[in-house]
Length: 609
Image: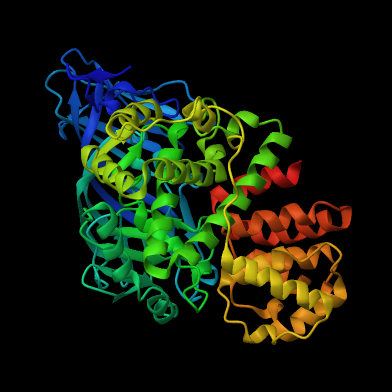
């Protein structure tokens, strides 16, 4: 369904028109516009006790407003923050979506207040014991709301098409710092009382809270890093280019609209590389490689300030609109800062990840999941968070750039971000906008079935050409000579980025065995590397080649690291043999308590198969 003016211009009202299969909310009837949240965090009980007051906007005949909840204890509900509503009720729910909280309203209802507390099954929350943190002395709490976990720590309308501003008052233990996806403190308040404001409207999946022993350091007038004290200097060094990265992004696609861009380095159990919470990106410490070679992840999260946070996928079936755009934008930032050869290297990595994902999904009988436009109804939306949305989406946009020319495509993207700022977008609406403001405006002829092949068909369109990387070609030449035993410069003298070392390890042939592993380890000390990406690739080789020297470090790595991208491949490799499966289950028993729900939910399924 589309709204158009007489001239045919698309009117963006997707927040009202799109049915979100992962939310019980009915925004056409009644929706939230502002949240005033008051909460107290108890590490002793591992509970957040809170009051959530929502300003609402309702149709004239609305008799109820529906919130999404999961594993919350609701104590009471008030209308206009004073009148008790005794007949609120829960509707029928399910294991994925939780339960709808149905609250009666009438024409006089301007707000509803929900008093509640979280439980030990609130999946968004991870309560860390001191030994699970970098400093080993203080407990830590962080949230992960994407995709539909915000409802497990706040009763909310948990759809990416519903946006709201918020304010908050949070009480935490004395001498702890609290941070949110909002305007944040830069020093600890010794009383433990914090106030927050987020004036820009955001969807629920961007709600975030972190509490711990944290400190702040600036990297520019609008940028800075938060981390545990033992990590802060390393974090600041790694991200010292963040201010120039922000300026580069603005030069490409317009003004940054979120005031500040700060990064919080979480403890190692954080399940993702990064989470683009506005004003406060959450980042994994696994990118602290010491050589700034993994900071493309920060470019990715920064790019989300436009694609995702500013213009948001209306449902999780349209996830590529968040991530495909962001990978494209990330690649442009990297090219502008570090050169085309570096960006080409990342593009080839994306292509290989994509091909692997496509092959895997088709083998599993999930060919439809290789479409850009997904159908995740009745499924956990996390199942759509694959390389398809990220990398196939990236190559679709890269192909559009090639068809239109970079200058025209940049003009189109700037207009797209401006026209839809702080709004949601779905696939059909984007295609209409694309046809009008790119293809139509510049009279661009596109190949037959171009759109359908990219969006609604499996795999990659026929004839797509694999990217080329000059830097990887040079690595290949060195590897060939090394395998032949020919004289080459010492590998330790190679001034390669992490990506080049990963390529070197990934291209080692299956015939390489323990002797080659031992030789490489003697020269490069891969088993003792401090680079998590390299460790994962090295450990995969160790498992395939029975390089037992690395096995204790593999266990240590899996127990201490919770990033799903890094641990899933190692467990998957181990369970290929009966001996490896026993090893995997033994390690997982020790490691699972350190993992966030997002990670152990995936691993539970993998290890039970």
